[in-house]
Image (cartoon, rainbow, N blue to C red; front, side, top):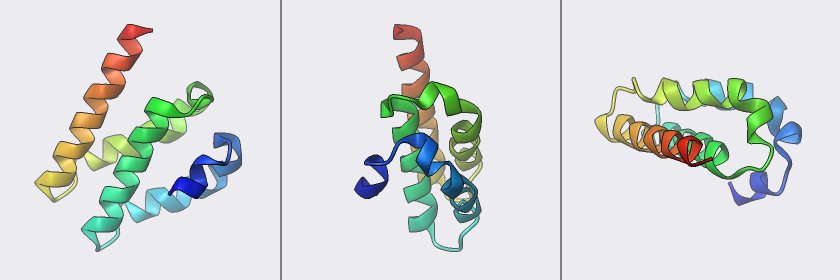
Length: 88
């Protein structure tokens, strides 16, 4: 995933639909990775504000994942994103 961070989010937009599809992957590891990536993008990428509408659904979909550990990760990241916004 570190290679994705070297791209601007604008350059990464074409892969967002592929990431959304991975949220329904059979592998929990894949779904967890997408959840963490979406949370990290919402917290750290400089141009994230222009693309909230594309990234937030990735994280919010994980809140309803079948595995409690992924749900908890998504809720924790969502909480962190909310706190970050209120600090601005």
